[in-house]
Image (cartoon, rainbow, N blue to C red; front, side):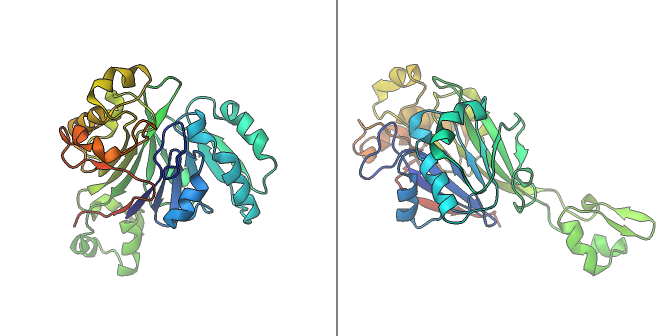
Length: 308
């Protein structure tokens, strides 16, 4: 089960009803904060979610509207008694890029781990203990005016446990749970592997957060069959497609087209320019390509579950 909450949907400038870019993903009692624009803490309070036990902050790039909420949030975590380490991931030289931000933050009573994750992604248990088995965060190189990346969060699902096979192999029932967790067990001199008693892997869950980007093949590929794509849609008008591309962004239509090409299940638009006063006015431009497109708003939330 995954719960995703949009915390900020504004590009460049915070507005009374739109904080700058941020979203929270919660899975198995652990959480990732995607970007941390100005107003993230206030938006989280309004949405009724807590950021204090965030495990990982995943930054898409280092423009101000995606990171200016960091100093305040990091300080608040310290004031609230945080002692466990916090991991921040991002593209390029994370330590160098965040040096000014951390200078403003000052001393913290917990450790900060600044990490560049590899192209193939990272099993989240390696960044912070306790994540569900196999949960992975994968960077998605994107096309913006600076080095940038989106993220795919993938939660796999094992095949069904087949008790009749376990019984035939002589596995005691009190050891079945280890096989279900992907661990081997020993029966006499024979090692029983999980795949010997498990069916084929079932469809898991995938959430993609685009960050700032022009439409690009890598984002489309990473978004294939995603259960939810949180996609930037900076500009509303169809005739702003070229303008969007020149600035490393998308308009509503381009976001809808990318979602359709990727075959996603759900598309939430976000990262609106201040020119987009009412996103719903432009929603038909995205729905022309992806009929199920929805306008993201601060506080919008969804819980995704495995298919039956």
